[in-house]
Structures are given as structure tokens and as C-alpha cells.
Amino acid sequence: MSISIYNQTRSYSKEEEKAFSARVSEALAVLLSSSYIDKRLSSGDCDVSADIKLVGSAAIKKLNAEHRGLDKVTDVLSFPVLDMVDGKLSSDLMPYDYSIDSKGKKTLMIGDVVICPECAKKQSEEYGHSMEREMVFLAVHSFLHLLGFDHENGRDEEKMFSIQEEIMQKIGLPREASEVSSKREAKSSKAESLEAEHPVGEILPHCGYCALIGRPNVGKSTLLNAISGMKLAIVSHKPQTTRNNISAIYNRDDAQVIFVDTPGIHRPESKLSEFMVDSSFRAAKGADVVVLIVDGRFSKPANVEKKAVETAKKLKKPLLLVVNKADAVSKESLLPLIANYSAMADFEEIIPISALKEDGIEELMDVIISKLPSQPRYFPIEEVTDQSEREISAELIREQILHYTNEEIPHGTAVEIDSFEEELKEDAVDSYDRSLIKIHASIICEKDSHKSILLGKNGQMIKRIGTAARQNIEKMTDCKVFLDLYVKVRKDWKNKPVFLNEFGYTKKDD
Ligand code: GDP
Ligand code: MG
Image (spheres, protein in one colour):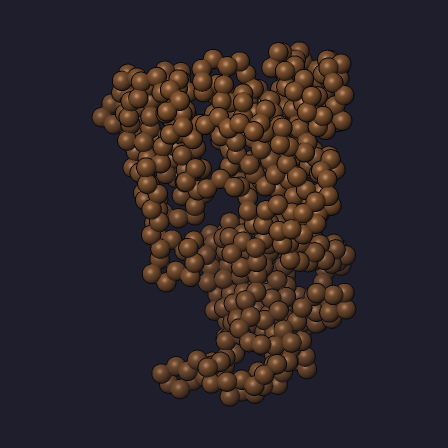
């Protein structure tokens, strides 16, 4: 019996790994020799082996998406190799089930286990027991999966948990008195319901589009990011950084919410601004629920907010008011704001939140979801955004331009991705197994003077922008990126429809 551990995290030390390795080897040996497991696995004519990989939360999330179509971080994943049911082999072992080394030693591989120590740590705190117990518990749980045990229904689940506890006791890691056992069971059945198939077309109790509208800088992108847990829309302290509608998709087992972030509503000054206004209202028109976000620091609605409320009223959509940045003001000072807005419209709910501190987000989600109709799921559960990596890359480059240059480079720049080439790894199993992404992009600005600012002395500025953007694109794609940036001048492009089309800022009529 042998277990190989591949630690791909830095959060788990060598000592912890060694102790863990000893415990799980013992646990597997005890399990294999128990009466629950097929005798052919402990007959002694071969070695039984399993691999355990320790990974971070991003990696396990990716594995979940790839293998189970689930967009979430889980504590553990099991990949069985043998065909087993409830500890018994469903068919005879065949020669190809074994690997034989040069000395003729036979090994029977039962499968791979992936564990996220980061999650284990959180759970051990939640359940009130040691990290060691949690890690070993997860390994034993996975071994049982590899050996054909499941927790699909209540009775199987009980059986699995009781064998699991028995093994834990035998290796000297019994359930501690302080442990909150019901919590784990409640959690496992919740995970199970999420794990059920979630096909597109499945009728959900609540499903639909939610338009987020509000003037620039109120925190729409920050809120979207808090909701989706991923950097989708761009957050900047400079207004109007979100140019295209970015929709994030929020999944719960009973609901799917498709968010449309809008560039904000404000007075049209150029054709580009017109496009922004236009797209905000277009988003609201197509939505099932409209959420107006305002900045809690300003109690008087301005024209922009009045216009938004009027539009929403005309569209006869459920309208919610979200008062953001509640962390920056006192509770009392929100009262006049709430009174002023209540006088303007019949908001179904008024919800104070802090997108930045992630306060009140769950309550907000509950309210939004309650307003959505029951209808078929629109998007597969693993989709987080319908924007392509290519489009998000352009946005991430723009984010760094805004970060590194100041007022001299106004919002008159666009980023165009000229090419986006992916190189696959030699042993790639799917199109996401990439070794490198090569991106060539152009930054389009309005004036020669802007070009020199963007390039900077000896090209320092463009280098800084490129490095920071590349790092963010690498995070988003989880892959090494080569980024090449060019700066081009196209005078007055913001008012020329031909350029607007070219950069995707096209007005759509519906
Ligand atoms: P958008 O233009 O509406 O998408 O706004 P952003 O999400 O880009 O946010 C604009 C600025 O407000 C950023 O500097 C955010 O950090 C800040 N911000 C967003 N939400 C909050 C919040 O809840 N509290 C505070 N204090 N600042 C926030
Ligand atoms: Mg934004």
C-alpha cells in the first residue's frame, strides 16, 4: 500500500505534510483490511496505491469547472480509477489495471484525490477540531469515493459517514467532543444538491436578468466583483471605466441571476457618451429587475438619478434602490437620502450595502432573487461571464492605462486586441491546457501628446502598463502571457462612427 503526496501549495508545511502522509497511509491500510472492502484489494499479490494532490482554492475551482461543470471551490475532489460499488469490485481486475515496474512489482492504482488545505483549514475552525483531523477526514472520505461509496441518498450517506468515523477512530483521530457534527452533515447534503445536474433549460424557481444602473463611480463594478468573486468588471476611482456591458452570472441551486453592468447614466457629451447612456437604458429594458445604485454619501438625487427612476417607472419593472458605501457614512445620515428617494418612486426595497466591505451583499442577493420569475436556466452553471477572455484582456489593459496615467489621458483611449493566440501544452487534454497566450494589442488615443505620455520617457510608462496588465491577464487566464502593446493615434475617434464600430462601441437598436 503506498500513497504519493504532491503538495502544490505553500500553505501546508513539510512537517504537516509528513504527519499527514503517515496518517493517511495508516487510514488506507486499515480501510483496505476492513470487512467493507473487496478482499481482492488486500490479497497481498500487489501494492495498492493512490495519489493525493494538495492544491490552492483557485486550482480546485478550475478542476470543478472542468470536470463537474461547477463554478465553485470545494474542499476535496476524487477521481476513481476502478469500477467499484460500495467497496466491491464490479468486474474482475484485468492486467491493464496494474502497473508493473522493472523489478516486476505490481501496483494497483485506485485513483487520485485532490484536497484544498486552505478549505480544510477554514472547515476545521468551523467544526472546532484540528486541521490534521480535517485533512485526514477529507482523505478518508475521498478514499471511500475511490472505493465506490457514495452519498447520493440518505441511507448511503449514513453508511459512508459511519465507516469514515470508524476508520478515524481506529487511527486515533476520533470525533472531538466539541465538534459540530450536524453542521457537516447539513453541509454535505447542501453540496450534494448543488452537485446534481444543472442543465440549461432546467426550470428554476428564480431566473433572469438584473440591470445595475447608476451614475459612474457609485460602485457598480465593485458590487459585481463582490458578487461574482472574480475580477470581471473594472474597478477604478476614475468615473466611467466600465464601457461595455459586462454580465456576470450568479448561480445558486434555486436561482440564476444574470447581471448587466452598465457604463453609467450621464449627460451625453460626445458620441461615446451617447452610447453609454443608450446602453444603460437598453440594459434596463431587457431586465427582469432594475437595481438603481446610489452613493450613500450624497442624499440629494440629481438629474441623472431622476432620469433613471423615470425610465424604470416607464418600463414597469420591479425597482430596487441600493445605497452603497454605507461604510463611509453614519446610519442616521442615510435617513434623508432614503426619504428623498422614497418620494420619487415606489421602490420595492431600499437596501444599504457596502460593496467594498462586502456587507449586505447576501441580503441584496436574496431580494434580487425573490423578484425573478420562475423560468428555464439561461446559461450553463459554470459560466461566470459571457465576455470572452479576449474582451476582458482589453478591459484589463485599459484599467492599467487609467491607473498609471492621470487626467492628461482622459477617457479618450480605446484598446484593441489585434491578436490573441493560444499555445497548448504538449500533453494538453483540452483547449484550456495552455502553455502560453500571446497577445498583441493597440492602445488608440486621440492626440500625439497623449501618445508620448502613454509611451513615457524611454518607454517606461508603456512598460509599466504592460507589466501590470500582463500580470492581471495571467491571473484571469491562469496561464503565462506574453503581451505586446502598441500606441496609435487616431484623431477625434470618439466622434467618428466608423471608429466606434471598429472598437465595438456600436449603438444597437431594438
Ligand atoms: P462604478 O463606476 O459604478 O462601476 O464604480 P466602481 O466600482 O469602479 O467604484 C468606484 C470607486 O468607489 C472605487 O474607488 C471603489 O473602491 C469605491 N467604492 C465602491 N464601493 C464602495 C463602498 O462600498 N464603500 C466605499 N467606501 N467605497 C466604495
Ligand atoms: Mg464600473
